[in-house]
Length: 81
Image (cartoon, rainbow, N blue to C red):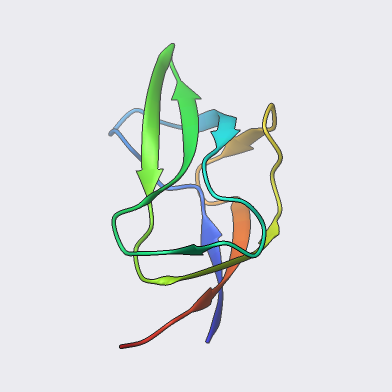
């Protein structure tokens, strides 16, 4: 199943963030809990982990992109089982 992952709210006050670096390459498989990308918010850098097993199909926000909570970040193919 194809899914679009959106920028999560990492804290109660978080409104936006900047993609710092991608840790998964296009076409690369990942497991639930693997770090997909890093995001900077209020001068704190956090790692965003995969919610499921899958493959990264498309990066919608390159490193350096400023996003608001809920904006699309990437497209994945979810792998079940």
